[in-house]
Structure formats: C-alpha cells, structure tokens
Image (cartoon, rainbow, N blue to C red):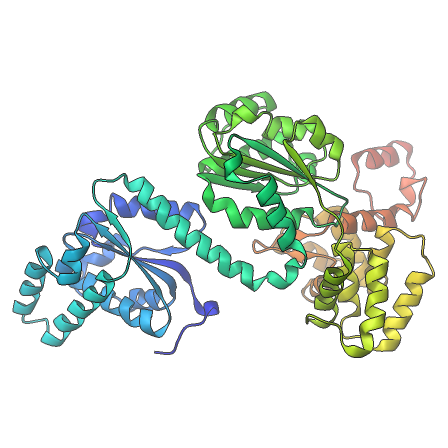
Length: 527
C-alpha cells in the first residue's frame, strides 16, 4: 500500500471500539466532543456491525485517517471485526505514519500487553473457531501487543470527561501545529507579536478574567494576529469563539444576530432563542459565567457591540480571555480593557520578506530586483496589506514594468493607503473593474455560488474574473465559499464610485446606502 500524504487524508480521527462496551457511553461522548472541536472523525454506523465481514469502506477510512483512537475494552478482543480493524491500524501505523492513541477502558494496560485475563480467553475462542486461521490469530496478537506498548489513557474510575478533554487537547494542538507550519510564510513578523501578547497579557498565571484590546490602523494585521493567537491557545479553554467582521455584521444583521452566533459557538447549540438586545445580554451573562472561554471579537467600532457581546468581566468564568480588535483605541479604553496592544508596521527586514513572498514566491527578491523591491517596501511603510497587494501586482512582471509602477507611485507621493491599493484596480480590464466595484458595494460577504448567476448575467465571466481578483489580492474566498474583501479595499471601491458624482448620488453608477437611494428616489435625480 503506498504511503499516504497529508493531502490524501480524509479524516482527522478514526475511532476503533467495541460497540457493546462503549458505543452509547464513552464513544458517544468522545465523538461529540471531537465533532464540536471541528475535528473530522470517522465512526462506523451501528448497522455495519450486524454483518460478519468488515467493509472495504471502513478499511479505506483507516488508510485515510491521521489519527486512530483505539478504545480497548473488556470485549474488544472478542470481536473479529475489532481485531481486523486493529491489524489494519497497525499496518497503517508503519506504512503511512498513522498516529495511534490507545485508550484502556476499564482494562489493565498490562493485561493488554501480556494478553492475560479476558484477552487470553478471547483468543482461545478464536483459535477454536474453524473460520479463523492460525495466521490471523497470530497477527491479531502481535498487533494488540504492539498497541499495548504505546502510551495512552487509562480510563477506570476517573471522570471520563477529563480523559476526553486530554485526548482532545493532544489532537487539537497537534493538528493546529501542523497547520501553522503550512501557512508560516504568510505570517512574517507575526511570531514575535504573538509571543509578546501571550507572555504579557494572556498568560494563565495572571488569573481572573482578562480583556485584551488589539489596536491599529486598517491593514496593519490586527485580525491576522488575533487569528494566530486564537489558533495557538483555543484548546486551553472549555469553549472558544472567533466572531469576525463585527462592525460589518452589526450593520448587516444586527447585534442580536451576533449574540446568537456567540452563544451558538460557545454552547454548541444550533437554536438560540433571543428576541432582543437586552435579553441577549442576560442570556450571555447567565450562561457563560461559569465557563472558561476564549472569545475574539474582530473589527469592533462601537461601544454598543461590546456592551452586547462582552459587557463585563463577570459574564465569563475564571481564566477566560476576551480579545477585541479595533481601529478605535477610544472604544477599547472606554470599555475597560485590561491591556491594549498596538500593532505597529513591519520592520524593514520583515517587510522585505513579506513583499518577496508575494512578488517572487520566495524568501528573498531576485538579485536584479533588490533595489526596486526596497523602493516599494519603503513606499508601503511597513503596512502588511500594501506589501501583499503591491507584491502580487508585480509578480511575474519584467523590470521595465516594475520601474513604470514605481514611477507611478512617485508621481503621487501624497496619496494615502487607498491610492496604494488602487494600483491593483488600475491594472484590471473593464469587466474586472466592474465586478470588483459590485463586490465592494454589494457582494462582499456573499457566497460566490449564490451570486454567480447574477454576476454572470452582467457579462462578468465570473469563473475567470473572480480568479483574476483573487490573484491580484483584491478579494479572497474562504472555505465556505464566502467572498471576502479587506475593509480598505472595499472603501477604495466605494470611493471610486462616489467620485463619479461627488455631490449628487443620482449621478453614480451604483447606490448601496439607504439614505442615498431614498434621496435619489425622493428628488428624482437619477441620471
């Protein structure tokens, strides 16, 4: 069997267990906890065990899993099904680097290693079974002995929930660590900031509940910093929730919707019944006050948002940490942050590295482009978003094109951030520009599949042109298919439309604000 690569994994965890012993207790609780953490887990259907022969689907699931949790219980070795699974898991452990995590459920680990007690009786029965070959029994015994020598968890009279939390912590932290290594080149200059925030403001030794503000101008990396912190420490809490785009979601959906989202993520309940702002405050304060939580509220721009989602320290259990990112330090100070961390621009070395990853897809610029690269880095003045956008714009371009782009920047030295971003817009074809403006005004936050027919009807060729906008770092699309655009890029697009007719909304190509639409309709000023 060929070795599996990380890209071929379909499941994070495969559960191997004896249904009679553990399906309706330990396994049910463990599976639910794994699912709540977003860990993709294979658990066979109860109906499958009615048959005598193990399915190929199940064996394939073992091959395509990163971890195998083997719950060794009293009747595990009595099941041919379980032993066939076990042999396959040990085979994959050697050939595909499957990580095996044994749980000794009300059995002595030494009995498993030495195959005494109930295990001895189980194998004696298998040897008498005419349908079982001696070779199979020897293979099963060897596999069981090998697994018995692996360090795991001994669940006896202890609280099962504590053992499940330990299992979750190990898997969750290792999966996060592997993911961090994959995306590290996009986090230039972030590691030191993460360490500083964790050491100074979020250390568990500080005790109590801590509110930490992360402040800085748009595009400086506040969200990236918060995401990395969340990823690294969320498994240390009983529950966690990252609420992004608070400012925008408040305007689009309202605060009650955000209160429901927060509670749904923390409590793992799909139906949260809240009918108004005040009721939401009471429910959050009452339901979360005994839970150690990690909550990130990203892009907050008003006190009412914090009042609705994280009004006071006593809303949350001891050890909780609440992180709030905002462009407005006044909002953070007013709401009683314990600490406020200001995100500054990248230093010259980190800025050049980040720019190089975007422009050359490697750590350092090519030799002939070093001086030109430094010019662009100086112009961006440490702003990560500008570095990424400019680098993407210049990717795979000739030196003359670089010089022309540099000259264009120098011709408008007084331009601010939005003008830097407009360089990418200027490089688009007309249909791509129109698509970008429509996304900025109407479709940011929408699912690309839901709006595909609309934008196709405008002649935008979405299958191609959305890819162009992604390539130019003007939009991104997350795993759920949602179209995302940085606030500064959205402001740039909307400002372009406003400048079509600065004083008269009826002269613009697009209207997205209620007051402008109302004004045009009332005064019949549409062009």
